[in-house]
Length: 112
Length: 113
Image (cartoon, rainbow over the protein chains, first blue to last red):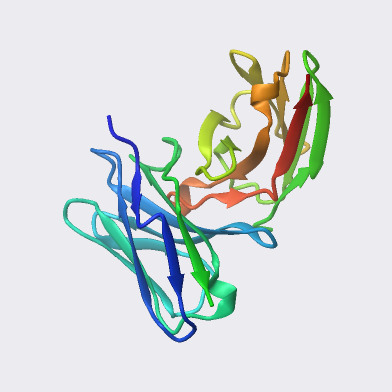
């Protein structure tokens, strides 16, 4: 089975721009979660989607949004980028709670 | 109450030794406790997980010990190898929060040959 695939792997954007990141979950996994990883804050939960519905949301500003499609693929969008948004963005998929979440390699976003 | 506290921040162990990483939590609603291993440039990989109705779970050289009354759990890596050198994260979640994982701050493990 193919693992979680995230695209692109690396991205450089300018302050004020917006960005869209993509995640293809493991086949059969309907839950997709997004996390932000930084050296200072560690791994922080952004949001989770299950069957195209946002099931949970972390403490991030409204500039961070996401969606999930009928094939379980998910995208996250960050608008009006700030320097502090520079981070590794990770997507994880699972069949459900307590089933084990499997992460992709992440998208490294650099905001300049 | 949502925090998971992990220690130590870094750990150096000799090859063949035992690596021990500890985590503590406050939220008694947590009912799933996974450990992840992350190598540089890679995403976290699920290593082993435990539920609170079990006090210990072993998979190969990796063992989770769980103390429900103390709200603590730990990862033991037996016969540590240089290839185990990575960052380890504990995490916790509760069934009523879906797949949301609360992560510890991570432990950077270095196994010296």
